[in-house]
Image 1 (spheres, helix red, strand yellow):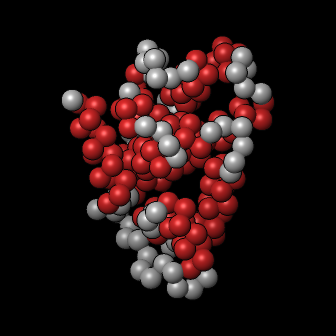
Image 2 (cartoon, one colour):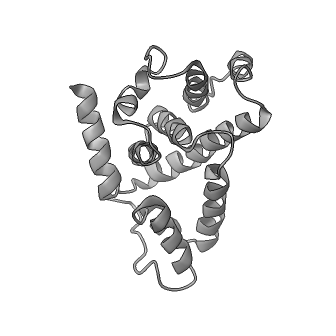
Image 3 (cartoon, helix red, strand yellow):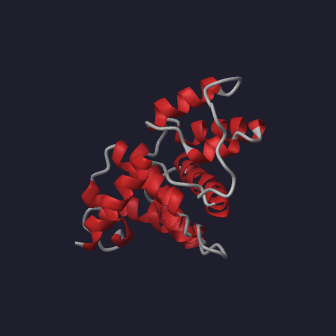
Length: 189
């Protein structure tokens, strides 16, 4: 159970349009946002960041969710791990690929460019940060500076979300929890 209860009636008041948009975007009302709503300025600022990070750019939306998943698993945040896996699938990443996400270095399902991105996501999400100049040299073989900033933006956003949700023990919603449970069972097969 969440350590801070989500707000009630999220679609009422000033935050209503934001939650309507979040529900349309995600397919459900996110409990972390419902908790964040206790401090509306934090919620609206975070929502602006999330829109900017997930905006169409040089990095595919599915890959952005896979970056979030690697970052979240490395940080030990089950809430964000479930959300990012669910989101990646919603963005067209196949379950088989998601089930092999932790084998990205050796799996033929991942391109060399994806491996470079996921490697940075893993290393940058560790404490202390294990990313290196070499990791960026490898990234630069496949991506320009704008794309690399998109990649690092996803990692950094999930750094915030991972701390937020693991600290508050945010309850995972039904849709991402069900998908993630199925995915973990598929991996164990």
